[in-house]
Length: 296
Image (tube, one colour):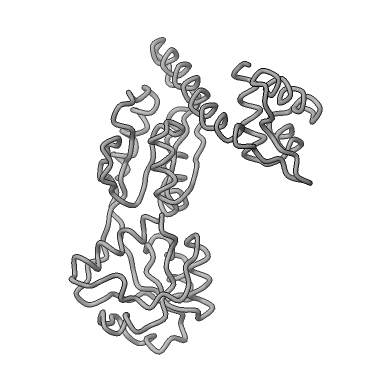
């Protein structure tokens, strides 16, 4: 077993395909298959199931995938630390972003960071807040920007960027001429919610509780897995929702959605720079963290 084989293995798992993994790392499919077989021989068990057109990890493969990501992340940190020791800022950094910062904030920050440090490469992994926090806790991601604070003794979180949420409706909604609604009006309206691991949902729950309102009073008619789906659901008239203003900025400008406030409810929130408490940040990660603080 070597790190190169683990790199190939993680690509197969992530892309669910031997041929796609080969194309991503410029290897032929037979070469990829040969490396996976070497790993299976080494561990004396099957790691990948070939199910039709998809390649999916077995239970042993899923276990190995978690450790492989940690080892590959440590390899990158080692190379970065040695480059920093020699007075160079270069290397590869894996950054996690929950849905809103990952889609609307981090790409611009990463672009500016890479212009300042042209020998640096960055991989941005996007998931809901719970997924990013889990990856940081397990060591697969060194740093993340998420939309909710977690009471977790393994994490260190720093409030860095302010955001606001808005009640969004479609232009033909009966509330289209209003600038705000009462919480009682909202409670009776069909509502589209984000999935349970969402930082937006967590922040919304906290905002409602701070206003003395039970989040369970909302009339949830649909739960959707990402912001884009919720936006389309609102446009289609399924219901109203509460989303980050950053996520619907273009929709508000072109008039495909309208934004309202909720009387007596503070919909402001923050994004949190998140790292593992027991993990010493690599020099490259520290530089990126400082870059985010300045951007915030």
